[in-house]
Image 1 (tube, one colour):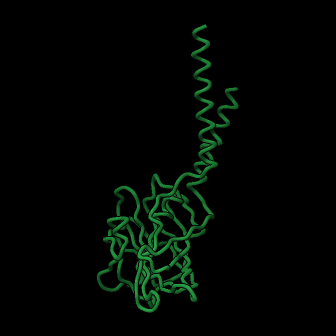
Image 2 (cartoon, one colour; image 1 turned 180 degrees about the vertical axis):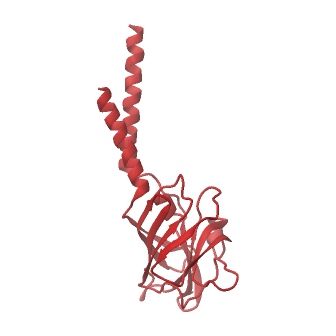
Image 3 (spheres, helix red, strand yellow; image 1 turned 60 degrees about the vertical axis):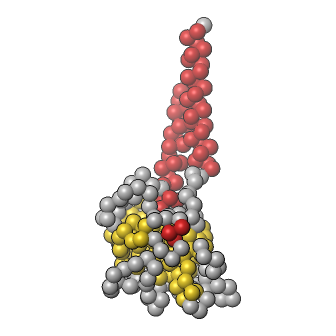
Amino acid sequence: MIRKLLLTTAAAIVMMALSSVARADSFTITGVNGTGVTASISNYSLVGNQFTFTITNTSVAPGSTGTITNIGFALPGDRPNTYTLVSSTNSNYTLAYDLNATSGSQNFVSSFDLVLVDKPNGNPTFGGGSVNNGIAGGSSATFTISGDFSGLTADQVAHAIFARFQAVNGGGSDVAGNGTAAVPEPMTMILFGTGLAGVAARARRRRQGAKE
């Protein structure tokens, strides 16, 4: 019985660990200002201190159109500016730190711990960027960033992403984000709950045995 309990609890712990190491899911972020622009975040993983993800600009005609210029991360907690852009399939991007949230993103977060900016010259802002250097509709870019992601899962990092759109529907702008925090996977919660239930049941039997 003890062995079964230990195996159940261990399975829950393993599932929780796997959920923070590697994910192949994808989700859509949508313009917060109602322009209709969208992007997908996919193939994201967190291995050690390296986070990798792919962002695809899904804003193409005949729907809303626009170009992704900057990509911000609103991570929880106070984190040091030790992030490094390890690799990028779009060589125009560099990293900037602690930029104020603007252009509609301030309705969800106050600032970004790090921002992938496509216009390295001058004073970077989240609301700026270069349309010519960005991620056009129908295009994708994959990035790997190293730094302090301690205490976070791949889901939490991915859902902290906001994408700055410019040249929206010809000349407007927007910011895409889902504005919600990631929740634990159902299977992870089921396994973890099963382990806790087993611990509680064993504790009750011990108390009952002591009373007899």
